[in-house]
Image (tube, rainbow, N blue to C red; front, top):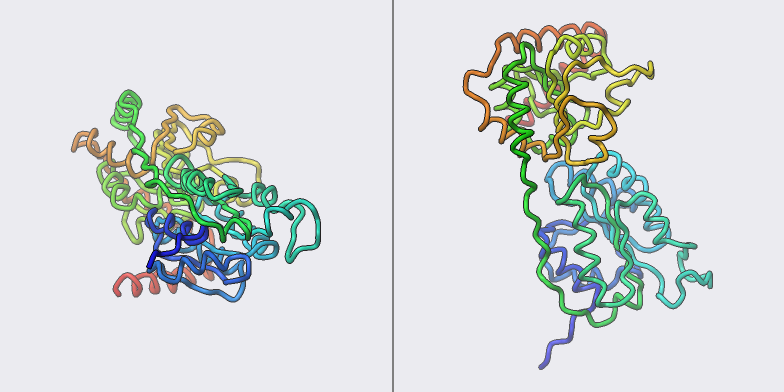
Length: 373
């Protein structure tokens, strides 16, 4: 007996699996029937929340922890609009997230005929927060839609992507999918690497600033900090990278104690930090911390252009940290890093008060217990 051809919805699930997706969050509905038909025998795990906004935030959280894109299946109309808030959060925090939504029959889109959950222009709405929004108008569009949706996850600064599939297209026979497009890691500019090495070797008091773009760089960051004997100030999205490490400073760069540490450093290596006011000017004074010589490393060329730096390098944080370790001589450490970090931590805790210190003690106990298991 000849096996029936897969539908576009079923093939889309195959395309996700081919791209190493292992978990999907979502709520089944009339507009996503074909997706769930494909999901049933795929081996992918499915998690059902009570609300599509929950599916979006689950996908966001999954991506933050695993490093893989978080995927959500939602219906048209309110299904998509309920995920816009987590998509916007993923956009702000550079979290790889893919929302796949249904849509009404392609013959009805934009005609305002009163179909179930109809929106004036769902595709345009998704574009307001997604890095890319792909509309699958016919089965042959699916291959390109998947490649374009996954492209931001491996090239440049990640964020949310969106694919919408009209109800009638989802049920049609699928065209053959090609193997996923593989991307090669970006080469690090050798000249810029040597310039960074030279500046770091000449530094007397080095400091490392890390943001969310360095959250997958834990081991390399720890080794680099120890090689440079440099305190590491972690913004909110980088907290936990150097948990209880003597060189770690898990405190806001907006605090006076941390600003003093930054101002007293003659070379600052900033890895994956957008220098946003939420971290660097949370008290809305209009003043960024005073920085002397900044070596800034970021995947996003637009980010690199937004703040002046002595040396701006487009590179992924972990890869650049590893390259620096290989390029720096073993005797780079200047001494005193742990003492500088401890002084900043103690002063920051005093600045925040007794209630904060009590909360911090509970949090550290929970972290230690979690890591122990």
